Amino acid sequence: MKYILMMNTMRAGHGVPEWPQKDLRTHIAFMMALNKELRESGELVSAEGLSFPEQARLVRAGKNGDPVTDGVFPESKEFLAGYWIVDVDSAERAYAIAAKASAAPGPGGAPLNMPIEVRPIMSGPPPEML
Amino acid sequence: MKYILLMSGTSAGVEAYHAWPKEDIEAHMAVLWRINQDLTESGEFVATQGLAGPREAKVVRGEKNGVPVTDGIFPESKEFLLGYWIVDVPNAERAYAIAGRISAASTNIPIEVRQFATHETKS
Image (cartoon, rainbow over all chains, first blue to last red; front, side, top):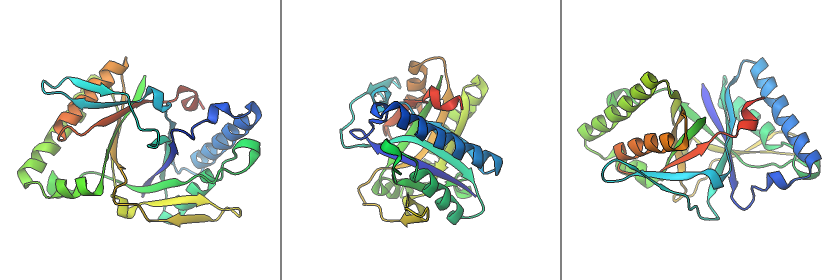
């Protein structure tokens, strides 16, 4: 079963680049070790970090089909900072991986314990809609 | 350059969608399939996924002893990710154009477009 593990963050709280270099390095090393572990166990499907919200745009189709972009996000909006897709035997295993990612070290090396949203991935649209 | 196109919505929006006439849902799915096919043919397609609804979602935090703490409560009004497309395109404008097509096929709902953080993908 495939699950997506989403790391959401508030715009105001995304100050990761302002962490001391040492703490940032520890955090990245932890994430790389976690990905390596998941790759070795054959559970990692993909993992990506996303650019910061300043580079994000909201796009809608205009009347003639041309894209209309908008870069304004409310300060309080939650942003997807990154995600993992894992292929695991049970939801419990997905939660265990999410807990590991949640406890990634932050400033001073203390565990961040950030919330990670875990959702099953649909293998395709429901058959009655095809 | 890789971009992710995120489609988000609320529970109310999903319920309204399920109440659409069958032929409208079929037409909507057909356009989305067509977009995926076009992207595959142009070599821009990387991945697309629809996600299960928020009732099946859990929020997990790590505890001091590493045991996961799960929480399944989401406020009704919360926006959640319905699905996404990952595309590999020469520039942001092309990503916006694809997002515009998806939006037009989906009652003009806004699609969030974000570039992948390149330093993370090199690992």
